[in-house]
Length: 197
Length: 203
Image (cartoon, rainbow over all chains, first blue to last red; front, side, top):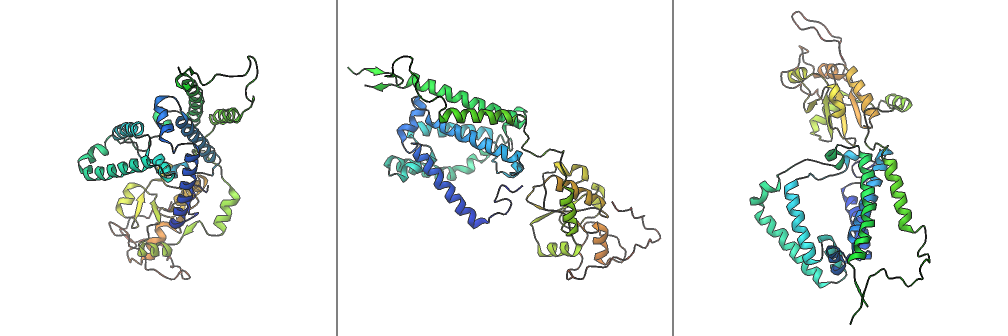
């Protein structure tokens, strides 16, 4: 067993920053090439006219899930060493709702706003300014929110744990949901998209 | 007046084939479905049924890479190192009576589920060394490549402290004085004393 590479000492802290930079660079390139530097394309997700965000992100989820599963099965990757943040259900529900509202109002999520800013879009710069202000504001009022922030702690919760299903069965179900979702997304796009002639 | 049209208006005559039969998305979808179906039979986490590579284990033991000595461990404790976990495999009562500084009490049966990480250095000890050797064997089989036993176990550690009574202090057992690795501590034969409890045959 040799992965996660950093956890097994393949490289140290300094090189890990270089690795993170390269991965981030590649992520930004792929997001931009997928068209996610455009607020119009991103917001179209919520008007059901262009579900590219759903399709690209779910494709990435399925690819990573299959890779992790099979690398773990082959004994290359130790799943227990992969970092996973805890599930704090109530604050994460509220935070997701706030993020979603900001996404459709502003046309960006935090990651894509950086991509758009890198391509020179002024609206992305304004959006990032808002994100930064929000982060500082949150820090200032955190003492009042701390109790809620730590509420509903379910620990490291995975789908197999939550549904009491074997890991492999969950993988099969997620792949099935993804493929059905892609087909459904295409139907929704055809239904809601209008082209002016 | 603008005429709205659905996006899937096709200029191709009816009945004509549109697109390849095996487009890239379709191939990827079939591949994902195949891998997802195969995954039903898979187990990415290591279960409790394991395989042993006897030759590999024998080679580790032959190289004496399966243990650390009391001298080495005492040096680590003296240096304040925090890059290892010291596991006391004895009963909670024995652990409460005395244990090596920094040791965590994990009875042998609870070891597989204790939550040890495979990238950690783990040092196992018991009274003599038999239980520690057993624990080392199945941790190796479970993929814990950095597991070691304390050579001679707690008995060797006690002997190295130079305590005249051979009995450990109530809370913790002090580390033996650090010596050069080339001169391992000598372990005198056990001499039973009147009134002392019978030393359990080391496990």
